[in-house]
Length: 308
Image (cartoon, rainbow, N blue to C red; front, side):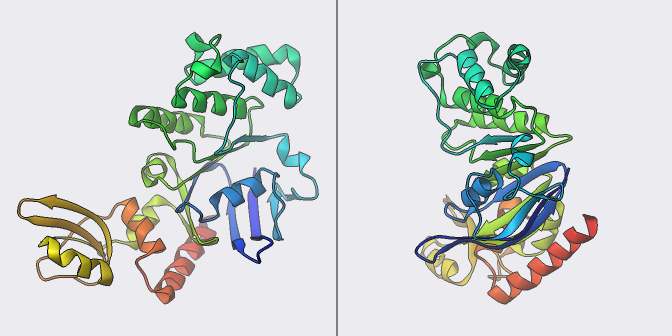
């Protein structure tokens, strides 16, 4: 299986481009689509799910243009949108039976498939409870179950952990990891830790533009030697924020512990530290000059193209 996104763009009536010049190619993996709110992630997900048509460019599934032949992808697509809705009076089983009917699945096989998926998402004991009594995490697990009804080759989940408590978030991450294998899983989120815990490939998108497509290891290498920590008086913090990308601050009795992303040592007392994925994310979305971003994006995408 192969997903190809070729020079994709989406323009709205106000002449605002929600997406512009997005190009990437992927085989089976967990692809983390990372970017701030409003970056264009959901627009891209809706295009991939054949809900929204692009203004320019194309999406190919195994070489077939999904705009011209959407059923080619819809037959093997599982989609959990950010605004996933339920029918609160239905039980989990009733809801999944309803969704299976909408997808046109064989009625004889539907019940067996639902039984399997309730095991996968750990909802067997709640199968006959009305959905209105489910927690946020349980509703998300019902959502992933409906997305898996047709055993999809392409699984798209858009901001799946927003509003979940830490325990539910970890459970959902583990579930996504378990679902990987011979399928493409696209996880769209602004939560860096969700991507760090699950993704084998990462795309960073901001203001409708794809900044980079790389493995986590490549992104770590990208900011190697550029992350610093220092202790400064709290009064110095505004000036540091103006000059550098500050990824975190912690107030202590001795002063502010500040984490900074920059090429050169920011202050004399700064010590170089190991980078995190959040450092790499901030490096691409806020911390560089446009020229440096363009240069590094070309390097990483060329590296990615050699592996594809």
